Amino acid sequence: MPPWMEAFEPLHSPPPVSWWPPAPGWWLLAVACLILIAWGAWRAWRSWRRNRYRRALTQQLEALWEQCRPDQNADHIAPYLSGACELIRRTWCLLDPRCAALPTRELLLQLEQTPGVTIPSALTSRVDHVLYGRLPADCNGETLALPTFHQQLLIWSRKHPAEPSC
Image (cartoon, rainbow, N blue to C red; front, top):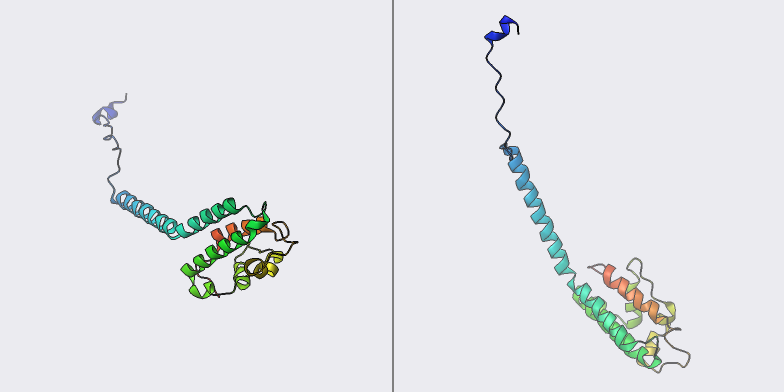
């Protein structure tokens, strides 16, 4: 070692780095993250609570389908359709009572305003005869496309807008 280097003091290692940085910026970042997490959880909870009627509607439609099975028994077509229309009307009453007062055919056509929902025309043309008159002999679950109608109702229950326009 050269003699001029002996005049220097020995090197000291810096103190160990703490596991938590003491800088105020990190504290602010942590608080901001906690606020964002709490806000996101609150919004998710609000959305879940706001959509509970959709979950109930879906469960009731499934229960009505299983109870009636109109695709297997033509005598159960009218009870299924009246029950489904009643559920639709009750849902519209929650959202906009003006829509609930529509005639049945117009109510079914109003469902088609939701993107992705198409009500079978065989059903909309005969719905009044099925509900309020005698069922024609040529009508059954297949000619009225009831399985398709049921699937479209399930899609509507998930996707309909919360503010309908009647």
